[in-house]
Amino acid sequence: MDNTEIRNLRNRLQLSVAEFAGILSVSKDTLYSWELGRRVPMGLTKKVLKLIAEDQDIYKKFVHMTEVEREQKRR
Image 1 (cartoon, one colour):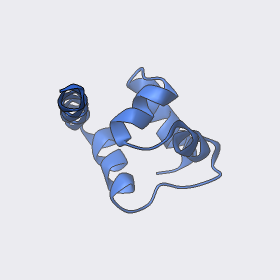
Image 2 (cartoon, rainbow, N blue to C red):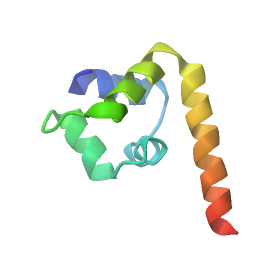
Image 3 (cartoon, one colour):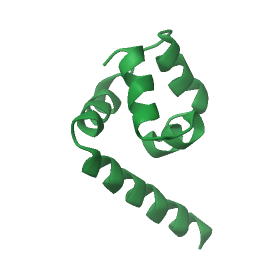
């Protein structure tokens, strides 16, 4: 997945850099670097991005997981 595909995916999901970075558990700077083509996602993150691009229901599951984690941290 190249930088344009990552940016297009984020835009298709209508997310800010901060929101998408949070869902992927990476920093805003990391996501921004991917979108600019300075760096590329590796390993599991690369696979997750491909899965989200192929099936937006997977994206919804990641959002739910992120919300559950945030709720657990508040306790």
